[in-house]
Image 1: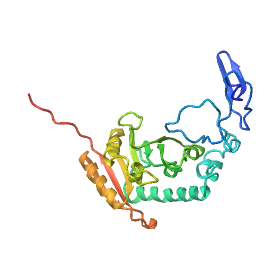
Image 2: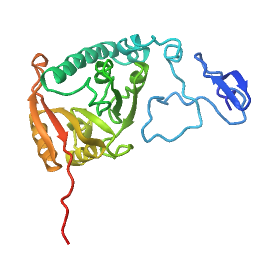
Image 3: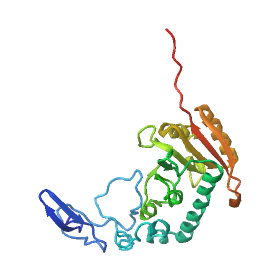
Image 4: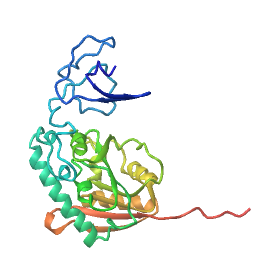
Length: 278
């Protein structure tokens, strides 16, 4: 099977074999017993959400540029646009602007809003709307790891996140997130309303209450949620947060951003149902 995939055998030791995936054009089409061939030219190798398994090999136009030996070494790869970013429309400029934006925003979170990033209180972090992973890159020097979630209906940028040396997944926030309850110390949601809206029609696909209830499920007691959006959306988010017993503080966005956004800093309280007599 590995030979049919054009992998190179490096070594065999007992019942362990090590194969290496090639960084050049695939040897397909070839004669193989598995019926493998190249996928059609219409195939998008970045599609990965509700996508049926295919019995073909995707043709990647940037195979050599995204190979392990071609990407910049850590930590340079974190801040340098990869070939995959440059392949996108205005990708390099978007990448650099996103990186700089989140450096400033994270500094504001820590300096002015009291978000305890960089302390021992926050270790497991989720970014619900990651785009290029700029938020995660901005906290790379902190003792945290970040799960970058790219909404499945948004541009397919997850490959760029992995090129940076970060991790992530695609997800539709109108569905439950596959993780254990009470997993994350901090959840970050930039533009939470966009997570439940169709990017083309703008139609709301599910309720904000359901999304925030899912956030509550995966947030640890006394964990923090940072939510950014328009004042109207934040007002609704505050109502939902209080209904699920979160404490809330609403702040203006960074002065230099010139944005009318509001920022909700919410804390999930530690509470239990009262004991009943009899």
